[in-house]
Image 1: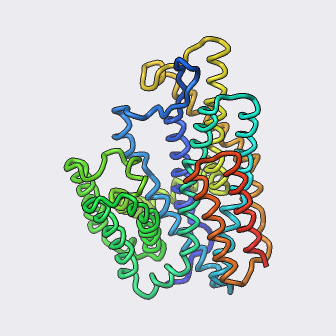
Image 2 (image 1 turned 180 degrees about the horizontal axis):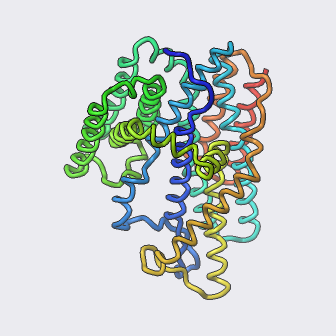
Image 3 (image 1 turned 90 degrees about the vertical axis):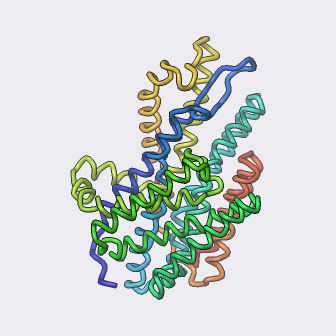
Amino acid sequence: MAPLAPGRDTGIDLVRAFCVVVVVLLHALMAGVTLGEAGPEFVNAAEGAPWFAPLTWVVQIMPLFFVVGGFAGSIAYRRLRERGGTPVAFIAGRVHRLLLPAVLSIGTAGVGLAMLVVSGVPSELVQTAGFRFGQPLWFLAVFLLCQALLPALIAAHDRAPLSSILGLATAAVVIEVLRAVAGMEAIGFLNLAFVWLTLQQLGFFLADGRLGALSHRTRVIAGLGAVSLLAGSFLTGVFSPDLIENLNPPTLALLLTGVAQTALLSLLRPTLTRLSTRPRIAAVAGFVTARTMTVYLWHMPVLLAMAGATALLAMSTGLVPPEPSSAGWWLTRPLWLGMAAALTAVAAWALAAGEQRRMPPPTSSGLRAAQAVLAGLAGVVLLLVASTTVFTATAAVLLLVVALRRIRR
Protein backbone atom coordinates (compact mmCIF):
# COMPACT_ATOMS: atom_id res chain seq x y z
CA MET A 1 0.00 0.00 0.00
CA ALA A 2 1.23 3.51 -0.81
CA PRO A 3 2.10 5.87 2.06
CA LEU A 4 -0.93 7.58 3.53
CA ALA A 5 -1.62 11.16 2.54
CA PRO A 6 -1.31 13.63 5.41
CA GLY A 7 -4.39 15.23 6.92
CA ARG A 8 -8.05 14.25 6.81
CA ASP A 9 -10.07 13.39 3.74
CA THR A 10 -12.52 16.27 3.88
CA GLY A 11 -14.70 14.79 1.15
CA ILE A 12 -15.28 11.65 3.23
CA ASP A 13 -15.90 13.80 6.31
CA LEU A 14 -18.57 15.64 4.34
CA VAL A 15 -20.26 12.35 3.41
CA ARG A 16 -20.21 11.17 7.02
CA ALA A 17 -21.72 14.45 8.21
CA PHE A 18 -24.37 14.20 5.50
CA CYS A 19 -25.29 10.68 6.66
CA VAL A 20 -25.72 11.82 10.27
CA VAL A 21 -27.88 14.80 9.28
CA VAL A 22 -30.08 12.56 7.10
CA VAL A 23 -30.61 10.15 10.03
CA VAL A 24 -31.67 13.02 12.30
CA LEU A 25 -34.09 14.46 9.75
CA LEU A 26 -35.51 11.03 8.88
CA HIS A 27 -36.24 10.20 12.51
CA ALA A 28 -37.71 13.67 12.98
CA LEU A 29 -40.03 13.06 10.03
CA MET A 30 -41.14 9.75 11.56
CA ALA A 31 -41.81 11.22 15.02
CA GLY A 32 -45.48 12.01 15.41
CA VAL A 33 -48.03 12.95 18.07
CA THR A 34 -51.74 12.32 17.81
CA LEU A 35 -54.61 12.73 20.25
CA GLY A 36 -56.62 9.58 20.90
CA GLU A 37 -59.56 8.96 23.19
CA ALA A 38 -57.22 8.28 26.11
CA GLY A 39 -55.05 11.33 25.43
CA PRO A 40 -51.82 11.97 23.48
CA GLU A 41 -50.12 9.11 21.67
CA PHE A 42 -46.61 8.90 20.24
CA VAL A 43 -46.79 7.33 16.77
CA ASN A 44 -44.60 6.56 13.79
CA ALA A 45 -45.91 9.17 11.37
CA ALA A 46 -44.51 7.27 8.38
CA GLU A 47 -46.14 3.93 9.20
CA GLY A 48 -48.40 2.88 6.33
CA ALA A 49 -47.79 6.14 4.44
CA PRO A 50 -47.56 5.55 0.66
CA TRP A 51 -44.88 8.20 0.26
CA PHE A 52 -42.44 6.62 2.71
CA ALA A 53 -41.13 3.58 0.80
CA PRO A 54 -39.95 5.64 -2.22
CA LEU A 55 -38.39 8.14 0.17
CA THR A 56 -36.28 5.38 1.75
CA TRP A 57 -34.55 4.80 -1.57
CA VAL A 58 -32.90 8.16 -1.02
CA VAL A 59 -32.60 8.41 2.76
CA GLN A 60 -31.49 4.87 3.66
CA ILE A 61 -27.87 5.86 4.09
CA MET A 62 -26.79 3.36 6.76
CA PRO A 63 -24.97 1.16 4.19
CA LEU A 64 -23.01 4.22 3.06
CA PHE A 65 -22.26 5.12 6.68
CA PHE A 66 -20.65 1.73 7.32
CA VAL A 67 -18.64 1.99 4.10
CA VAL A 68 -17.39 5.41 5.20
CA GLY A 69 -16.75 3.97 8.68
CA GLY A 70 -14.58 1.31 7.08
CA PHE A 71 -12.73 3.95 5.07
CA ALA A 72 -12.09 6.19 8.09
CA GLY A 73 -11.30 3.28 10.40
CA SER A 74 -8.80 1.85 7.94
CA ILE A 75 -6.98 5.17 7.59
CA ALA A 76 -6.98 5.77 11.36
CA TYR A 77 -5.70 2.27 12.13
CA ARG A 78 -2.89 2.42 9.56
CA ARG A 79 -1.77 5.82 10.85
CA LEU A 80 -1.77 4.46 14.39
CA ARG A 81 0.40 1.54 13.31
CA GLU A 82 2.80 3.91 11.54
CA ARG A 83 3.25 5.69 14.90
CA GLY A 84 3.97 2.40 16.66
CA GLY A 85 0.44 1.83 17.99
CA THR A 86 -1.09 -1.60 18.48
CA PRO A 87 -4.40 -3.21 17.51
CA VAL A 88 -5.38 -3.21 21.20
CA ALA A 89 -4.77 0.54 21.40
CA PHE A 90 -7.03 1.06 18.38
CA ILE A 91 -9.82 -1.03 19.90
CA ALA A 92 -9.48 0.75 23.25
CA GLY A 93 -9.72 4.11 21.49
CA ARG A 94 -12.90 3.07 19.71
CA VAL A 95 -14.48 1.80 22.94
CA HIS A 96 -13.66 5.13 24.59
CA ARG A 97 -14.95 7.26 21.70
CA LEU A 98 -18.22 5.32 21.32
CA LEU A 99 -19.17 4.43 24.88
CA LEU A 100 -18.17 7.48 26.92
CA PRO A 101 -20.85 9.75 25.38
CA ALA A 102 -23.34 6.85 25.60
CA VAL A 103 -23.00 6.73 29.40
CA LEU A 104 -24.36 10.26 29.76
CA SER A 105 -27.11 9.77 27.18
CA ILE A 106 -28.40 6.48 28.62
CA GLY A 107 -28.05 7.72 32.19
CA THR A 108 -30.05 10.84 31.38
CA ALA A 109 -32.72 8.71 29.70
CA GLY A 110 -33.01 6.60 32.85
CA VAL A 111 -33.41 9.70 35.03
CA GLY A 112 -35.95 11.15 32.60
CA LEU A 113 -38.04 7.98 32.65
CA ALA A 114 -37.93 7.93 36.45
CA MET A 115 -39.20 11.52 36.53
CA LEU A 116 -42.06 10.61 34.17
CA VAL A 117 -43.06 7.70 36.42
CA VAL A 118 -42.95 9.87 39.55
CA SER A 119 -44.96 12.58 37.78
CA GLY A 120 -47.78 10.14 37.11
CA VAL A 121 -47.41 9.95 33.34
CA PRO A 122 -49.37 6.94 32.02
CA SER A 123 -47.21 3.82 31.90
CA GLU A 124 -47.97 3.28 28.20
CA LEU A 125 -46.40 6.65 27.33
CA VAL A 126 -43.38 5.93 29.53
CA GLN A 127 -42.90 2.55 27.85
CA THR A 128 -43.23 4.11 24.40
CA ALA A 129 -40.69 6.82 25.27
CA GLY A 130 -38.24 4.17 26.52
CA PHE A 131 -38.75 2.04 23.42
CA ARG A 132 -38.27 4.98 21.06
CA PHE A 133 -35.12 6.07 22.86
CA GLY A 134 -33.56 2.63 22.57
CA GLN A 135 -34.45 1.94 18.93
CA PRO A 136 -31.49 3.79 17.32
CA LEU A 137 -28.98 2.19 19.72
CA TRP A 138 -28.67 -0.86 17.47
CA PHE A 139 -26.20 1.24 15.50
CA LEU A 140 -24.00 1.80 18.56
CA ALA A 141 -23.77 -1.95 19.23
CA VAL A 142 -23.13 -2.95 15.63
CA PHE A 143 -20.63 -0.17 14.95
CA LEU A 144 -18.73 -1.05 18.14
CA LEU A 145 -18.52 -4.68 17.01
CA CYS A 146 -17.38 -3.72 13.50
CA GLN A 147 -14.71 -1.34 14.76
CA ALA A 148 -13.48 -3.85 17.37
CA LEU A 149 -12.97 -6.42 14.60
CA LEU A 150 -11.42 -3.89 12.21
CA PRO A 151 -7.72 -4.66 12.98
CA ALA A 152 -8.25 -8.36 12.27
CA LEU A 153 -10.27 -7.62 9.14
CA ILE A 154 -7.66 -5.14 7.89
CA ALA A 155 -5.05 -7.90 8.24
CA ALA A 156 -7.30 -10.26 6.26
CA HIS A 157 -7.83 -7.55 3.64
CA ASP A 158 -4.10 -7.02 3.24
CA ARG A 159 -3.49 -10.76 2.82
CA ALA A 160 -6.41 -11.59 0.53
CA PRO A 161 -8.69 -8.64 -0.24
CA LEU A 162 -11.16 -10.41 -2.50
CA SER A 163 -11.36 -13.58 -0.43
CA SER A 164 -11.99 -11.66 2.79
CA ILE A 165 -14.90 -9.60 1.48
CA LEU A 166 -16.36 -12.51 -0.47
CA GLY A 167 -16.22 -14.68 2.64
CA LEU A 168 -18.23 -12.13 4.62
CA ALA A 169 -20.69 -11.58 1.77
CA THR A 170 -21.15 -15.33 1.30
CA ALA A 171 -21.94 -15.74 4.99
CA ALA A 172 -24.57 -12.99 4.67
CA VAL A 173 -26.10 -14.74 1.63
CA VAL A 174 -26.21 -18.15 3.36
CA ILE A 175 -27.94 -16.64 6.39
CA GLU A 176 -30.46 -14.84 4.18
CA VAL A 177 -31.25 -18.07 2.30
CA LEU A 178 -31.71 -20.02 5.53
CA ARG A 179 -33.99 -17.33 6.88
CA ALA A 180 -36.11 -17.16 3.74
CA VAL A 181 -36.20 -20.77 2.57
CA ALA A 182 -36.15 -22.65 5.87
CA GLY A 183 -38.24 -20.08 7.71
CA MET A 184 -35.51 -19.58 10.34
CA GLU A 185 -36.36 -15.97 11.14
CA ALA A 186 -34.14 -15.73 14.23
CA ILE A 187 -31.01 -16.66 12.28
CA GLY A 188 -31.45 -13.51 10.21
CA PHE A 189 -30.17 -11.45 13.12
CA LEU A 190 -26.68 -12.89 12.50
CA ASN A 191 -26.60 -10.53 9.55
CA LEU A 192 -26.39 -7.69 12.05
CA ALA A 193 -22.74 -8.74 11.89
CA PHE A 194 -22.17 -10.06 8.37
CA VAL A 195 -24.05 -7.46 6.32
CA TRP A 196 -22.45 -4.51 8.10
CA LEU A 197 -19.01 -6.14 8.25
CA THR A 198 -19.15 -6.70 4.49
CA LEU A 199 -19.95 -3.04 3.93
CA GLN A 200 -17.16 -1.98 6.29
CA GLN A 201 -14.81 -4.22 4.29
CA LEU A 202 -15.96 -2.46 1.12
CA GLY A 203 -14.76 0.76 2.73
CA PHE A 204 -11.24 -0.71 2.91
CA PHE A 205 -11.22 -0.99 -0.89
CA LEU A 206 -12.20 2.65 -1.13
CA ALA A 207 -9.49 3.67 1.35
CA ASP A 208 -6.60 1.85 -0.32
CA GLY A 209 -7.45 3.15 -3.77
CA ARG A 210 -8.53 -0.14 -5.35
CA LEU A 211 -11.98 1.18 -6.24
CA GLY A 212 -10.59 4.45 -7.54
CA ALA A 213 -8.23 2.49 -9.80
CA LEU A 214 -11.16 0.86 -11.59
CA SER A 215 -12.34 2.48 -14.79
CA HIS A 216 -15.24 4.90 -14.77
CA ARG A 217 -17.18 2.44 -16.93
CA THR A 218 -16.64 -0.45 -14.50
CA ARG A 219 -17.89 1.54 -11.53
CA VAL A 220 -20.95 2.76 -13.43
CA ILE A 221 -21.80 -0.82 -14.47
CA ALA A 222 -21.35 -2.06 -10.89
CA GLY A 223 -23.62 0.66 -9.52
CA LEU A 224 -26.32 0.19 -12.17
CA GLY A 225 -26.12 -3.58 -11.75
CA ALA A 226 -26.72 -3.29 -8.01
CA VAL A 227 -29.66 -0.92 -8.59
CA SER A 228 -31.14 -3.31 -11.17
CA LEU A 229 -30.90 -6.29 -8.82
CA LEU A 230 -32.42 -4.21 -6.04
CA ALA A 231 -35.32 -3.12 -8.24
CA GLY A 232 -35.85 -6.72 -9.33
CA SER A 233 -35.99 -7.86 -5.71
CA PHE A 234 -38.70 -5.27 -5.04
CA LEU A 235 -40.78 -6.23 -8.08
CA THR A 236 -40.60 -9.95 -7.32
CA GLY A 237 -41.38 -9.49 -3.64
CA VAL A 238 -38.06 -10.90 -2.44
CA PHE A 239 -37.39 -7.78 -0.37
CA SER A 240 -39.63 -4.97 0.82
CA PRO A 241 -39.36 -1.77 -1.23
CA ASP A 242 -39.25 0.02 2.13
CA LEU A 243 -35.51 -0.03 2.83
CA ILE A 244 -36.09 0.83 6.47
CA GLU A 245 -37.99 -2.47 6.84
CA ASN A 246 -34.85 -4.21 5.57
CA LEU A 247 -32.94 -3.07 8.65
CA ASN A 248 -34.33 -5.45 11.24
CA PRO A 249 -32.81 -7.90 10.56
CA PRO A 250 -30.53 -6.59 7.81
CA THR A 251 -31.21 -8.14 4.40
CA LEU A 252 -29.16 -8.43 1.25
CA ALA A 253 -31.08 -5.43 -0.07
CA LEU A 254 -28.82 -3.31 2.13
CA LEU A 255 -25.71 -4.91 0.59
CA LEU A 256 -26.97 -4.01 -2.89
CA THR A 257 -27.78 -0.50 -1.68
CA GLY A 258 -24.28 -0.20 -0.24
CA VAL A 259 -22.66 -1.32 -3.49
CA ALA A 260 -24.67 1.23 -5.48
CA GLN A 261 -23.91 4.01 -2.98
CA THR A 262 -20.20 3.16 -2.92
CA ALA A 263 -19.97 3.17 -6.71
CA LEU A 264 -21.61 6.60 -6.78
CA LEU A 265 -19.34 7.85 -3.98
CA SER A 266 -16.20 6.71 -5.79
CA LEU A 267 -17.31 8.56 -8.92
CA LEU A 268 -18.19 11.75 -7.05
CA ARG A 269 -15.17 11.94 -4.73
CA PRO A 270 -13.36 14.70 -6.67
CA THR A 271 -16.52 16.83 -6.68
CA LEU A 272 -17.18 16.14 -2.99
CA THR A 273 -13.61 17.08 -2.10
CA ARG A 274 -13.99 20.42 -3.86
CA LEU A 275 -17.33 21.07 -2.14
CA SER A 276 -15.88 20.18 1.25
CA THR A 277 -13.36 23.03 1.04
CA ARG A 278 -16.04 25.73 0.82
CA PRO A 279 -16.01 27.60 4.14
CA ARG A 280 -19.67 27.19 5.12
CA ILE A 281 -19.85 23.55 4.08
CA ALA A 282 -16.56 22.84 5.82
CA ALA A 283 -17.82 24.48 9.02
CA VAL A 284 -20.99 22.36 9.12
CA ALA A 285 -19.15 19.15 8.22
CA GLY A 286 -16.46 19.86 10.80
CA PHE A 287 -19.03 20.53 13.52
CA VAL A 288 -20.91 17.28 12.85
CA THR A 289 -17.82 15.12 12.29
CA ALA A 290 -16.32 16.13 15.63
CA ARG A 291 -19.60 15.25 17.37
CA THR A 292 -20.92 12.32 15.35
CA MET A 293 -21.80 10.02 18.25
CA THR A 294 -23.12 12.87 20.38
CA VAL A 295 -25.48 13.93 17.59
CA TYR A 296 -26.60 10.36 17.08
CA LEU A 297 -27.13 9.61 20.77
CA TRP A 298 -28.97 12.82 21.59
CA HIS A 299 -31.19 13.40 18.58
CA MET A 300 -33.80 10.92 19.82
CA PRO A 301 -34.08 12.47 23.32
CA VAL A 302 -34.51 15.83 21.55
CA LEU A 303 -37.30 14.41 19.38
CA LEU A 304 -39.00 12.81 22.38
CA ALA A 305 -38.85 16.14 24.23
CA MET A 306 -40.37 17.88 21.21
CA ALA A 307 -43.13 15.26 21.01
CA GLY A 308 -43.80 15.61 24.73
CA ALA A 309 -43.99 19.39 24.46
CA THR A 310 -46.41 19.04 21.55
CA ALA A 311 -48.62 16.70 23.59
CA LEU A 312 -48.63 19.06 26.57
CA LEU A 313 -49.49 22.01 24.32
CA ALA A 314 -52.35 20.07 22.78
CA MET A 315 -53.78 19.09 26.18
CA SER A 316 -53.47 22.56 27.67
CA THR A 317 -54.78 24.55 24.71
CA GLY A 318 -57.12 22.10 23.00
CA LEU A 319 -55.21 22.42 19.74
CA VAL A 320 -55.26 19.09 17.91
CA PRO A 321 -51.98 18.14 16.18
CA PRO A 322 -52.48 17.59 12.45
CA GLU A 323 -52.85 13.98 11.33
CA PRO A 324 -49.70 12.52 9.77
CA SER A 325 -49.58 12.88 5.97
CA SER A 326 -52.38 15.47 5.98
CA ALA A 327 -51.90 18.83 4.27
CA GLY A 328 -51.57 20.56 7.64
CA TRP A 329 -48.98 18.05 8.74
CA TRP A 330 -46.84 18.65 5.65
CA LEU A 331 -47.13 22.42 6.07
CA THR A 332 -45.71 22.15 9.59
CA ARG A 333 -42.86 19.78 8.65
CA PRO A 334 -40.32 22.45 7.62
CA LEU A 335 -40.65 24.12 11.02
CA TRP A 336 -40.60 20.76 12.82
CA LEU A 337 -37.50 19.53 10.95
CA GLY A 338 -35.74 22.86 11.42
CA MET A 339 -36.38 22.82 15.16
CA ALA A 340 -35.20 19.21 15.40
CA ALA A 341 -31.96 20.03 13.60
CA ALA A 342 -31.34 23.21 15.61
CA LEU A 343 -32.05 21.65 19.01
CA THR A 344 -29.94 18.61 18.19
CA ALA A 345 -27.07 20.91 17.19
CA VAL A 346 -27.39 22.79 20.49
CA ALA A 347 -27.38 19.51 22.43
CA ALA A 348 -24.33 18.31 20.49
CA TRP A 349 -22.50 21.58 21.11
CA ALA A 350 -23.25 21.45 24.85
CA LEU A 351 -22.67 17.72 25.43
CA ALA A 352 -19.78 16.76 23.16
CA ALA A 353 -17.15 16.92 25.92
CA GLY A 354 -17.39 13.16 26.49
CA GLU A 355 -16.79 12.33 22.84
CA GLN A 356 -13.92 14.82 22.54
CA ARG A 357 -12.27 13.99 25.86
CA ARG A 358 -8.71 12.74 25.53
CA MET A 359 -8.39 9.07 26.29
CA PRO A 360 -6.18 8.00 29.24
CA PRO A 361 -3.32 5.57 28.51
CA PRO A 362 -4.99 2.41 27.15
CA THR A 363 -4.40 -1.11 28.35
CA SER A 364 -1.95 -3.28 26.45
CA SER A 365 -3.93 -6.40 27.28
CA GLY A 366 -5.97 -7.92 24.51
CA LEU A 367 -8.08 -9.78 27.06
CA ARG A 368 -9.07 -6.56 28.85
CA ALA A 369 -9.94 -4.93 25.52
CA ALA A 370 -12.10 -7.92 24.56
CA GLN A 371 -13.84 -7.78 27.94
CA ALA A 372 -14.50 -4.08 27.41
CA VAL A 373 -16.10 -4.71 24.02
CA LEU A 374 -18.27 -7.53 25.40
CA ALA A 375 -19.39 -5.43 28.38
CA GLY A 376 -20.27 -2.53 26.10
CA LEU A 377 -22.20 -4.79 23.74
CA ALA A 378 -24.04 -6.38 26.67
CA GLY A 379 -25.13 -2.98 27.96
CA VAL A 380 -26.54 -1.84 24.64
CA VAL A 381 -28.13 -5.19 23.74
CA LEU A 382 -29.90 -5.17 27.11
CA LEU A 383 -31.68 -1.95 26.11
CA LEU A 384 -32.52 -3.33 22.67
CA VAL A 385 -33.94 -6.60 23.96
CA ALA A 386 -35.63 -5.48 27.19
CA SER A 387 -36.41 -1.88 26.12
CA THR A 388 -35.22 1.15 28.06
CA THR A 389 -36.59 1.39 31.58
CA VAL A 390 -35.20 2.89 34.76
CA PHE A 391 -33.81 -0.54 35.68
CA THR A 392 -32.30 -1.45 32.30
CA ALA A 393 -30.82 2.03 31.83
CA THR A 394 -29.11 1.73 35.23
CA ALA A 395 -27.77 -1.73 34.39
CA ALA A 396 -26.59 -0.57 30.96
CA VAL A 397 -24.73 2.41 32.42
CA LEU A 398 -22.98 0.10 34.90
CA LEU A 399 -21.91 -2.24 32.09
CA LEU A 400 -20.63 0.67 30.00
CA VAL A 401 -18.65 1.99 32.98
CA VAL A 402 -17.13 -1.47 33.41
CA ALA A 403 -16.18 -1.43 29.72
CA LEU A 404 -14.52 1.97 30.02
CA ARG A 405 -12.57 0.90 33.10
CA ARG A 406 -11.33 -2.27 31.38
CA ILE A 407 -9.62 -0.32 28.58
CA ARG A 408 -7.54 1.76 30.98
CA ARG A 409 -4.00 0.78 31.77
